[in-house]
Image (cartoon, rainbow, N blue to C red; front, side, top):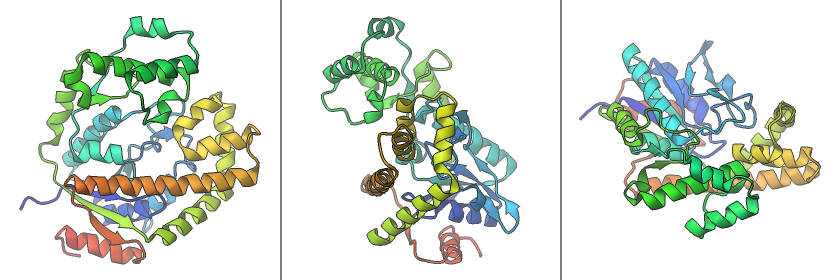
Length: 331
């Protein structure tokens, strides 16, 4: 049997993925590759749960990649993630390092593990010009003429996102043969040829053989961990982090794109929520998000992805030993 050359640690928020991945990377002479759609942003450490101290193992800092790639305000996407993953993957292979992929962003994980054939939708300047000046309500109505049910609410958080969503749907309508390949990135294809960009990415996956390990807790234990972690982050200065982003000129509506913590804390800072209401609503929203993450992972399993689940209540060292056994390596 072909040996594993990629270890993936996945699970819902607050499941202890980072610590386990870091300890395994240290044991395997490896490095961690983040699979988190928000940890790519600089200056967004507490709200995105980077948990940078977890990368210190036995007095040594385990290297982590695909964290702090772009400034807040930029809208990073799955196409860019797949491209950047392959660059890091190739570098680790060249240096003889074992790659440990770690995260809870299901789409990013699947883009790597299932070798998604992604292309970028090119910019349609004529369409963009025709949409300029329209209100968000008008743009939303136009978007609904392409698809009646809007599954991704981040498509309509502001006019810029709505225009891009319409541009993507218009391209999809005119190119139905490519509808399952599309990336929602805001940048045009690097080569000017979207299909060529896709094929260039695919060439890096020939030798990928991943072992996928998940961490899960019983529902009540998971809820307790999420609530505890939220209060810890608030004490660590998460409100100050969001306030600093607003001071940098990021529009409050744009912060919705970066996740629940930034949405609700922004509502508190702009006076739309009291502090107790913010904490309560944010806590509920994170619980719902964790449930959606587990739903995504179960969907992956139904579609043929083998995930070896670990009991989250196991001590960290026991988890490490179990994964090493799965890798068929001597401890």
